[in-house]
Length: 90
Image (tube, rainbow, N blue to C red):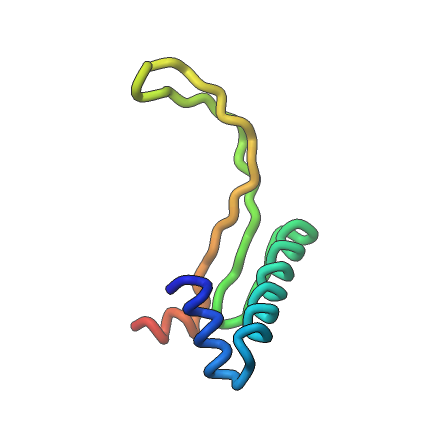
């Protein structure tokens, strides 16, 4: 499902226009980003939990040339499914 498909679904299911649904989806996206930056964790109870994790700098090898490459430290996001989401899929 693409973002456009999701906007269409939200618009139809909630009785909103596509523009309103797109703004709502963008607001949720912005809220998750802000929460991860500020607190490092966002939980939507029953649905999922987003957690920001720091990854240390490492070295890797370029498989084409065999050259060692430095990989800088970064922040990665992990997503864990909540109980209601797991139940819906099984």
